[in-house]
Length: 148
Picture 1 (cartoon, rainbow, N blue to C red):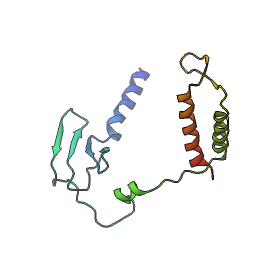
Picture 2: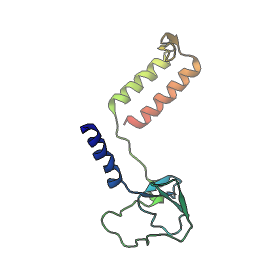
Picture 3: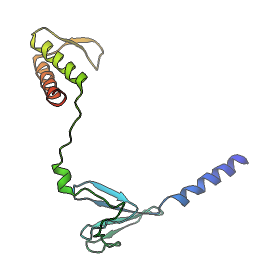
C-alpha cells in the first residue's frame, strides 16, 4: 500500500515541474535548438512541440510569439555568431604532453622497429611505415600545441 502511494506521489510531480510546450528551431550556426521559449528573432521558422500529445505546429517566419529584445539586460547576454567563429581558443600548454611527444619523435626517428599492443587482439605487433608517419604527424601537432 505504501509503495503505491509513493509511486502516485512521485509520478504526479513529473507533470508539475515539466513544461508542456517546447520550441524547436535551427540557429544561425546550423545547430538544432530546443527551448521552453520561442526564438526571439522574428525571421526564424520554428516548431511548437506539445509534450501532452504528438502534435506539432509549424510557425512561419515573422510570426514570433515573443518580441525581440533590443536592449541588453542581465541574462540575455550572447556572443555574436561572427565573433564566435573568429574567436581563437588558446589551449593551455602542457609540459607533460610536450615531453611525451618529443620523446615519441626521437623514438620514431631512430628507425627501430616499434611494437605496440593491438587494440583488437591484445597482442603485440610492429608499427607499419604508414602508421609511423601518422604517429609522427600526431606528435608534431602535439608539440606545436603544447610546447613553447
